[in-house]
Structure formats: structure tokens, C-alpha cells
Length: 284
Image 1 (cartoon, rainbow, N blue to C red):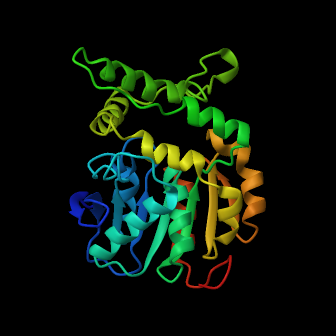
Image 2: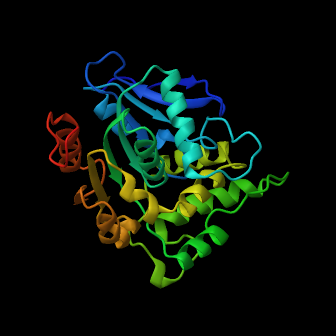
């Protein structure tokens, strides 16, 4: 039986960080899980509950997303700023040593956390990460995550619904032609509704961590990750096109294309990597 997923807040100089957790008090190294943009750690609840059966799992909402505080002045921040905020939140919760899992935006933040404090980050799982060309980056920064005005006719409600929905249908979501169809279909109505609500909570600031991830200079930063790393990407992920190039930047990581983060064989892969006493990638 899966443990309950509980919620709380950590106090940091960057603002309050909301988190979900399961398995508090279980032995072993805690697992910190960082969600993709947009939305919040609610999207990770199936993984939190799964891993929470065997270890303490903490999944914060990125600053500016979900129920975490927005950046203090609402201006853009770089990925190292978000990494520092998460590290401060974990320190407030008393976590000195931990494993990391990050997907998309969360993968960017997790990599920077591992770079900043490798003595605290024991192992790292990357679940999909991009490597945009300069032209792609410029296009994404201009079009992918615009600021959304809040008005009295509720146009923000319609915009967020279509934004979240269309990201499942097209890549990138704002190019809705046949050539950009993803061919995956939509999630359930319940899951789509939940994700829309999480984005709406932070509609004024959702774009800030998104823009940080798009602008993150991964070609320069990823080679600096020194902790044992499992480099994964789902076969259906739009970021598979960058997988080989990312692997070349992280030659010591173990690369695996998966059937998705919740597939049984993927969960078994994650568990074997996290539970190994000796790293198959490098010394702990």
C-alpha cells in the first residue's frame, strides 16, 4: 500500500517553498524530485507515492510555480538562483545528503544543484533535458512562455487551458501544423484538469522558471556534473532529439531511453541505480 503524500512549507531567504513528501522516517538517502514546467510537484505524485514506500521523498514546487512563493520582485532569474532556493529549502528541512531526480525544468535545476553542492547530492537521475541551438533558444524565449495578463473576463482561464492541452498535441505548442503533431493524444480529463489548475495558481509567474530553463547554458554547465548520473529520456519525449548531444556532454553518465517514468521497467531501473552501493558510473 502506498504511503500518503503529505504537504508542507520550507522557509528560505528566497521565499516559502511548498513541497510534497512521503515516507518520512524511512531509512536510506532521501530522494528529492523536481518537476517539469509548467505545473507543480502534483504531477509527480505517482512517483512520490511509489518511491515513498521505501525511502523519504521530498518534491518541492519550483519557486514561481504551484504553491511556492514567486520570485521576490517578479523578474527573471537564472537556473543557479532556483538551485540555490531548492538547496536552501532542503537545508531548512534538515536534509544534508540526498539523491536527485529532475524532469525537464527540474532536470536543469537538479544538475545545477549537483554542480553547486556535490557533497550533498549523492546521485542524479535526469528524465529528459533539452539542448537548444541558439536559434531554437531565441524562438522559444520569444514564443513559448509569455506572460499572461489576468483580466475580468477570465481570458487567462482559456489561455492556460489551451496552453496546457496543446503542449500534449504539438511541439512546440504554438506551432499547430501537421508537421508539429506529437501523436501522443491527451491525458485523462482529470489529469488535464489538475495540471491546468496548478498552472493557474501561478499564472502570473509560471514563465519565470520556464524562461530560466530555456536560457540555461547547458553546453557549458552539464560537463561540470560530477556525481554519478543516470541520463534518461522517454522514447516519446520531445527531447529525444537532443539525447545523443547531451550524452556527449556527460560521457560518464549512463544513457537509457525509457518507456516513460512510470513504466515498471523504468521504475526498476531507477531503483537499481539509487539502491546500488557501488556506482556503475563512478565512485560515490
